[in-house]
Length: 238
Image 1 (tube, rainbow, N blue to C red):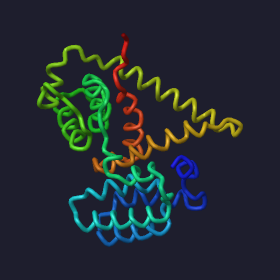
Image 2: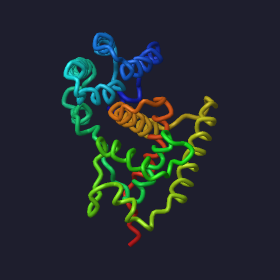
Image 3: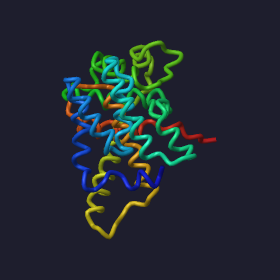
């Protein structure tokens, strides 16, 4: 899988395929959706999988079936026989987001995403609660002993967003610095770093497709990617 992900898109069709991913999300006509799926089924690569996997769960049966058929075609073209990693790659559970960070970090995660809906006051309680409910429809989050996000938010006096947001700003600065450094063709990411970045980007593709927020996809994708830094297990200080 690492080899296939590192090769990525065909360089001659990279921009066209990325365009089709966005077009698939924006397609309102079933005929347009099926036409795009037909093209991806014939020439799409592994990077199509998370977006198609998201549509495979679509309530619209025609879109879901078209996405599933396209996944079958891609799998038959790219899978390496007897490769267990590739078997997982085409499993719906592989793409199901899970929250492994702290509950307080999840509140900060929600606040980060909520900012796209209310830039003036992203910490507005109603905006946070509404955004959280949408996110929790797609992300497995254990709120126990709380039953709702609102209850978690109101019963978390220790939640401190400042440190989380400072860390996110640091991540953005590091990412910007790295992108500038990569403009120097003598500097390249390691295969492991490139693989990890590809996986993060694809998981964001899956989630933003499932969320179906009517916002700019590129902005939301970047927010999801940066906010994912909050989804880390608690460090054991013992």
